[in-house]
Image 1 (cartoon, one colour):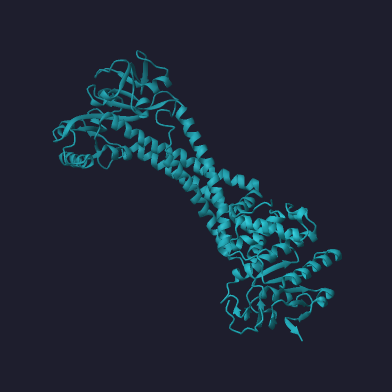
Image 2 (cartoon, rainbow over the protein chains, first blue to last red):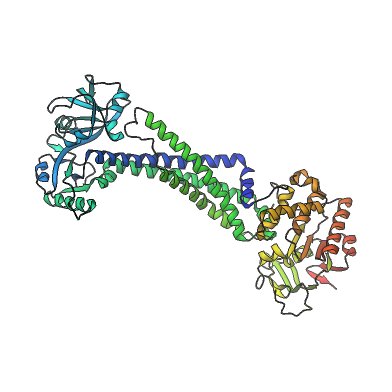
Length: 377
Length: 227
């Protein structure tokens, strides 16, 4: 049986004839997609973990200072929020990312000892902290990374704290975090009398009103009671808090640059390929190939580069996420989980990048006059 | 296809063909009129630069004239007839330099012409194999062009030209890169194809014996047909 030549087989042969160039181009697009998978995957997982934390703690609304990246509100406003109808509990809190050791940093929360958020944590050993004393609780992941157990000491920002308990939380952000009394956190953060946010728990939604409508109405009531603050539904706050916003910005910005480099690599490869194959394109045109056939061939080659680079990039990005999630420096904020939708999105972006990069070379190839192309030396 | 010029119209007709380059400073053809009937075997000869290849390119729809028209079965090329479709379905080209694609095997080089007309994959492979067998290349189907002799390459090119069962074969110096033995073999193959298939054949050549062997011989000099 004679070998069959298909359109895609022809495209593959064209790519394979310049193996080194094809492989180098693949490296470029792999890096772009790998960066997208790892960084955007990380930032989305980060947001997801934030939402899990809110959900597991029963937080319905986060109240923060409006128009400021770093929120700072008087702690005394908790009383006013508590007076808003439908509010059942208010938890003033501070959170920040802090260096615990030169190698390990972690999210540090300052909560009141009676905060309802503590109820969502499972205490694995020890006991809860007391206000007014330098005591901390460690998430089990962080305790493991630091090699600490209940009764040990840990220095944070120059203050020595006693680890009074180890807990397990519902999200990676809690498992890799430190929780201390709010007053202690105010001291080391230089925020006496101030908090970053109030986490509000509402009564159950009344009949006839959806949860979303109810939370929005309650948020509006809180904002009306406390001018100068913003009350975000938990899901919205999970997506727009300063850490997540920063992670999203860095992830998309870096990925965009990496993808642009990958796209330029494919464009360069396809432009060179069309230039080198001028006479061959002339032959195809002489055989009756229409301009659109030539466009399809070149776009198929470019899309194949994008597809292969996409698959390799997904593998590389996922590998990078797994590596980051296993390092003590980043384990507390990086999750290795990547959603299938994100992988599909990465592959679509990779193929679209290939098509975008191949568009101009394809258009040029299709415009070649058969007789001029045949004369090309 | 409609034939406004009537039932006796030629398969190919050129009227007042002018082809100039370099913004009119160089004229390759200076008003050429020619009619070629279906099934005719025509040789076009002339010295280098006389315009014979240019005429073949215009008749084959590879290029467009600066002035004048080419009609295929009475329909004007480039207007009533799409040039790409014309080249893929009605014309089989054979070139002096073979113009095979180096990354494709012989059998794939034949199939590549059929990709332009959306032939089914299994039919493409079968037809390519059959044509190569006809050309005496059954054992060389899976060879790449650089593994074939010049004569074999030209036979692959002939098989490719026949791939879409065209109405006409247009050959531009088909023996120009071949020794005398291979030249004679190729011309014998072309003669056989014409006789078996009744195809119209136009051969551009500068070799007198090939030109004189054709029933009709058109001479070109300085872009004009010599009467």
